[in-house]
Amino acid sequence: MEGLKKVAVICILKHQDKFLLLERLKEPNKDLFTPLGGKLDPFETPLDAAKRETWEESGIHVEDMDFCGILTETSPTKYNWTSYVYIAEIDYQDAPECNEGTLKWINADEILNIPTPITDWHIYDYALKKQKFIFDAVYDEELVLLRMDELIENKNIC
Image 1 (cartoon, rainbow, N blue to C red):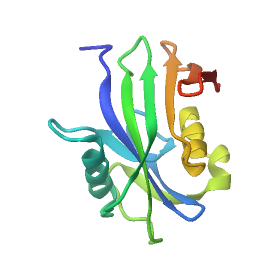
Image 2: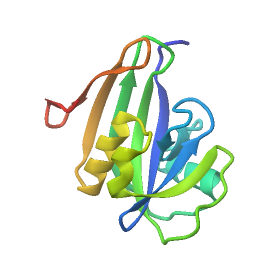
Image 3: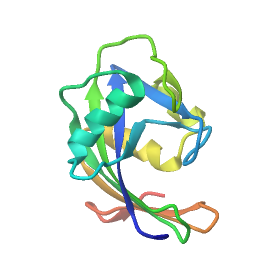
Image 4: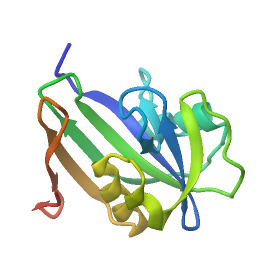
């Protein structure tokens, strides 16, 4: 049903000061660089989904992932998500093949210079600082971000 939240995971893979990001082939976020991720399967915990999505999209097996926070995205269209965000420090390897797009290693200091969702800038910032978050992003009907609030500290961040 349109408007209902889909539940998903966002899986940040990191090696030192580099992120393994996906240049997406399809919506949502087509042609943008995003972390790996996807929807939860029935009866699956968010952590299990994060590990599964990481494996399915990259072939990388991760034992440990740290919970970072929650991103809730609301719009008057079908774009409505609640995403659990995890991060894993992995050993460096050549970017594997992915059927969802092209995986590339991106330096942390280049994040603001690549096409990526605005919400992700804040996710990386908080994740790197090991600061837990609950973000509430609100979009218009054209999926332009109207505002994003950080609910733990009760502040508007964009």
